[in-house]
Amino acid sequence: MMEKTFNTYERLGTVRTYQLGSMLKAMRPDINIEQTELEAIAGEFDTNRQGKFDLDTFNNIAVRFLVKQARRESDSFIHKHEIYLSDFAEK
Image 1 (cartoon, helix red, strand yellow):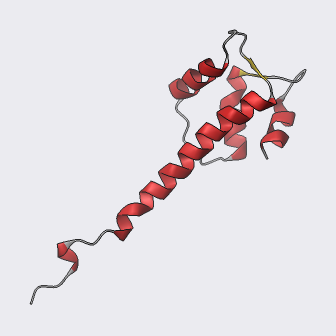
Image 2 (image 1 turned 45 degrees about the horizontal axis):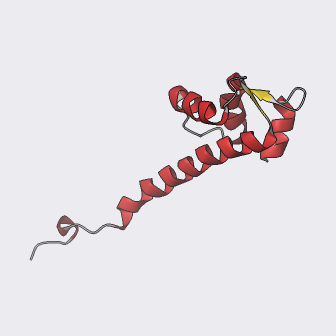
């Protein structure tokens, strides 16, 4: 999935920073992306400040966002397994 998305957007074997958000949305339309966070993570991987990413680097960036989204989704269901005193009827 990531390679297919990369190949759709790539030019000369790289993608640009401004394309990353669109690429992540193409893979997972419901993903929550904060632009400042995306820029910060892209900056971590763009050590030479060219604003270009190859497939391996794109995969690393995408995995960070996809894992974070998966954690958010699993965390949103955790509260359903908690039991409260108010769940029991008074006698």
